[in-house]
Amino acid sequence: MNLAEALEVAGARAARLSATDGRLPHVTGDDRRWELLSPLGAEETALTGLPWTGGFVAGQLWLASRLPGHEHQAAEAASVADLLAPRAEQPTTHDLGFLFWPAAVLGYLATGEARYRELGLRASRSLVERALPSGVLQVIGALDDPAWRGRSIVDTWPNLMLLWWAEREGLAEAGHAARAHLDATLEAFLRPDGSTFHAARLGDDGSVLEQGTINGHGPDSTWARGQAWAVQGLVAAARATGEPELRGNAEHAARWFLDHLPADLVPPWDFDAPPGAKDASAAAIVASALFDLGWDDEALRLLEALVAACLNRGDADGLLLHCCYRHPVGLGLDSATAWGDFFLLDALVHAAAPDLRLDPLG
Image 1 (cartoon, rainbow, N blue to C red):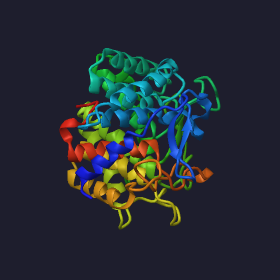
Image 2: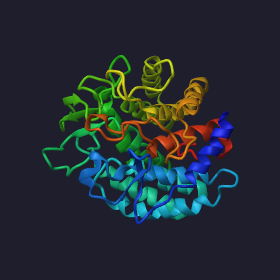
Image 3: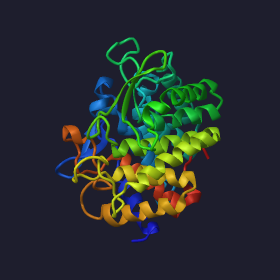
């Protein structure tokens, strides 16, 4: 199957997505059907799997609505964005980026409707409120809660896409917050060899108090999706700022990821774990980022490998199979995921129909 044919499959799969009784696809379970979760669930559950993925459902629908014959999917994308909208004014999580750059920013780019621009800006203002004196955008929890104070995960870097976009829309404080977070966390997460820690805790003075993992194999391992988030976030930062040092960091992290892939190019869930579960979503995230980095040959190699080995051609739900959600707690060990599907679709559009792509930094 060539990439244009795979894009058609992806568009058809996206047509199956919808909100059901206020719930959205999250990851597939043992029965290969979507687990449906409310995006308005209690925020303290986010690190264990509740509300952070709904934006990627809206994002898939906005991307698919650009494809010939799929224009009607914009209506469902709008419904999902409307479902998510109350979260925009809740400054309780770093995941406002994941929720609203696919749902609101891509909606604005797809339709030109001012309400999506305002939704994205409202969410950006809320995300800025997560900033600590160190510059860290605390991952979750009340800012005065000593159990959470200063805690961050590498996943925040791609969430900054919302702030980079908002800066371009005139919200200067969004850009300031994104730069401050990167400045505070870059050395805490990015190791000298280009690999990454997943989690860290920083003091108000910027000192690194802890480094380790939540979803990885061990404190010093390299969780594959964390490495992918680092690549995606650093590429976006380099594009937004034009800073050569950030581009160099993005290339360093991307090269480490590529150099540690197995022969089939589908990464393990953690690069230091014993052989077992794969995480195709990590490769999809990196493929999307590599196109933005200008590494088209490497992006195409990854994308073609994913289409060959992981594209869903059967009756199960989802588009990208063989993803891993949270291995340490046994969740989604061989599943499709909302984010894996989104980034695969984005990469396919970039490869096969680049004029139709929706780019927050374009």
